[in-house]
Length: 356
Image 1: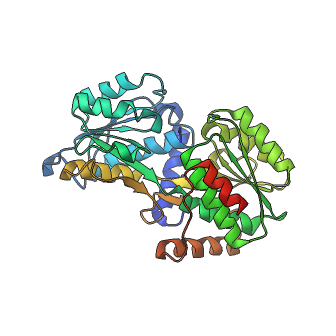
Image 2: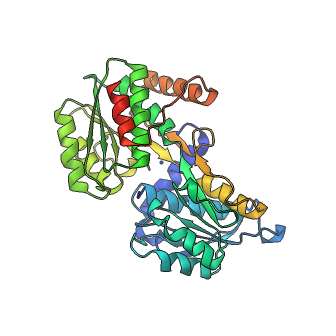
């Protein structure tokens, strides 16, 4: 899967995202060194002095790839280490790229795509360099292979609460680009949050294809269909196809768009972006560096969630105050355990929840 405030810290993250977007391709595909602000450094005897990051697409997509690049640069600055960025690495034959990064002196390689899960362990074994990838907890190997996951359903629950509060027609829609684990988890969270807010709400769902992540035209076509079915809030999950979803909402009347992973506010020319379930990869990357430094890398999964602010819901000026209060109440309930968000990793589980 190719690939984000409730606190002041996350608001700063949004500003950083906008700044990176304005920089365009100048920030992509190049090596850089971050200085200062080190909580661990070479002087303290830390093992990690350089990290490397590889993602399938360019880091200017307002989503998975851009959020990953930003987080890699952020933790590099925080720890005072060098960072080498290899965004736009594609999916095919990524093994040479990961190997080159490892052999170029990286002490930790971030393989930023679940599609890299086959290559990452092989590269780690050959180069003896710790590598972290996504959505493969069974692949953990002490000292060599780490895994990152998201509790993205928690943020999607909040998005469902928001959608139910702002819909005028009582109908909302979920549009996904593929049968994807994270999209399934967020679909389930959204359904649960919307129904907890309004049990009578109607929820329409549609999928572009088996792997329509970058299908912008498909995103627009399918979203048009869902809007025609009566939905006036669209929860869209699609990487590149999400731009087509946004276009469909822009051409409709009185319809809101809730995005995922990144913050498209800088390109929201029609003012239809209501919110986004933001993913900040910083906590996972930070934990990975700390684990390498203390010798525990590969022993546990690094998870993004509401508690560590790796998952959050973007607050925009389009959200009514009463709706945001409902979001904050739901967030507090998830954090204190009074609200349990269902985990629907498989499409069949989403369908069962929708039919229940």
